[in-house]
Amino acid sequence: MRSGWETVEARSPASMPDGFTSRGHSDAMSVPIIYHPDYVAPLPQGHRFPMQKFRRLYELLLETGVVGDADVHRPTPATMQTLCFAHTPDYVKGVCERTLDAHSVRRIGLPIDDALIRRSLAAVGGTLLTARLAMEHGAAFNTAGGSHHAFSGHGSGYCVFNDVAVAVRALCHEGAIGRALIIDLDVHQGDGTAEILRNDPRAFTFSMHCEENFPHRKQLSDRDVALPAGAGDDDYLPILKLELEALLPAVSPDLVVYNAGVDPHAEDRLGKLALSDEGLEARDRIVLNACRSADVPVAGVVGGGYDLDPDVVARRHAVLPRVAAAMMS
Image (cartoon, rainbow, N blue to C red; front, side, top):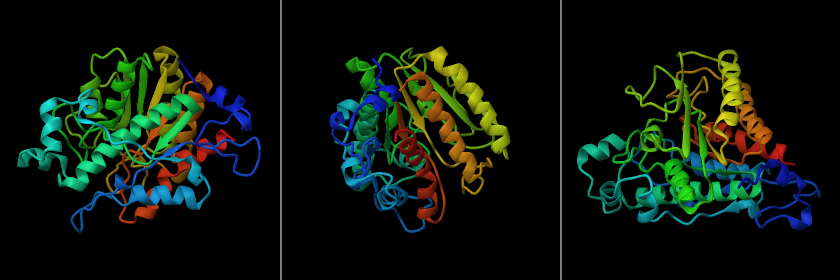
C-alpha cells in the first residue's frame, strides 16, 4: 500500500503526524530525519573514512533550518535476528561477538570494536526506521546508511551490514511492502546489495556507477549503468532521467530506497566521475521528481562521500533533504 507525495501535500496542519512541524507557516511540511549519536565511532588517526560527516550532516540540517528538533527521529538499533534477513547467522555472530578473522576485518577496512558494532547496528535500525517513515510521510532521510558493499556472508569497502537489503527484506517479511526499487547512485557499484537481493522478486536493484572504480569485480544488478571515468553533468543527468522514466512504471514499487552517495562529485577523493554541485542537486531533483510523479515514497540513505574536510562532504549530503523539504513545503 502506497503513502506518497500527494497524500503528504493533502494533509492539513491539524492532521500532521508526529515528527512534523509547520516551521512558521501553515502549509509547510518538513521531512523526517533519522540520526543516532552512535553513527559516529572513533577511528585510528589518519583513517580515510570520513566518520565525522554523519554528525556534521545532522548538525548542518539543524543549523540551516532544513529541519527542526521535532523532525529528528532516533532509531532503535537492529537486532541480530533482523540482520539475518540479509546476512548469514555466522557472519552476524562473527561481527557482534568480535570473532571475525583478520582477513575479514581487513576486507571491511574498519576496526571491529564495540563502538563500530554499535554504529553498525544503529545505522541498520536507522534505515529501517527511514523506510517506515517514508511510507507514512512520502519521504524520509537517514543521516547514515547506504552500506552497499556488505554481502550476505562478509563485509567489504567500509561496509559491515547492508542496511538497505535488511530494511527491504524486513518490510517485505512484515507485509508492509510487496516490492521495492533500490536506486543506487553512489559512484561505486552496489555489489553487495546486488548479491543479497539477486533472484528476489520483491526487490529490483538499479546501480548507476563509474565503470573504472571499486569494486573491480562487479556483481549483476537487475539493471546496471556503468559510466566512463570523467563523465559529467551533461553525460550523467539525461541518462538518469531516461532510466527512471522507464524503471518506475516497469517495476511499480511500493517503496524506493535511494542511495544518494555524493562521491560522483568531481572533487570527491574516491570518485572518478565529474558531477558539479549543480549536477548533484539536479540528480537528486530528478530522483525525487520521478518518485513524486509515480506517487512512490522514497527513503534516502547517505552512501559515499569523501573529503578531508567533513564540512565539505556534509554540505553535499545535505542537498537531498534540503531539496525534498522544499518540494514538500
